[in-house]
Length: 290
Image: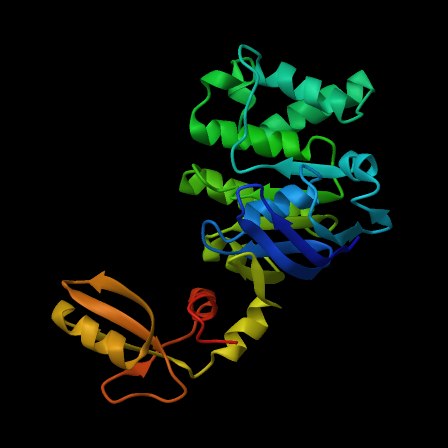
């Protein structure tokens, strides 16, 4: 099922306008929402998840009008917020069983099978009888993934899901999402470009509450082909480069500074650099692409 977001805006009581006329068409499969911290990603995720209402606009998932049929949406929704709280002194297996019951999984045999399956899938089987509030940050994040999947949702929202995960856990999470992504609409909200590059068929970039672009990784790379150039220089020369060119990013390398710029042609002293999705992201965030 597809998710349609039309003209959605949200201003909080403190005057901060978190969303500004957001329009997105999100198809089934993995969809990435990229943006820096404070861009409006979490505000949009909370709005889709019916945790807050927009000031105006429409949200429709399949044939469900989200603003008018919130309970219907919640029946088929899985949500992993950026910060996932847990009940104190309850084991993982008991808490996941309870959450599955709340999600409408009433058959006890089926519920038990699902609970054990998702604890295994998130590598928590060996810790299933431990209280969740004693888990490490990464383990709590994995439990959050399990609770988001327990009702086998049609719409899955994950907000900064790989925060706190080590490389092995992150790969496991990628594999979980890849397994379910073909049958479910999954929105992956993140500031980590590689998460989107590795997983998503479609993505959008949001900044300052506005959608800058919606595209595919292939189209994004094509848009900056032969426009990314690099040079390695001494640190003292960086400011000079920054005043002359549209700098995508800089990084230290062997005591020198590697600089990437955005330009229609290759400046003297630079060489061609194979474009990446990160280059495309920064080119939009910095206003080099419109």
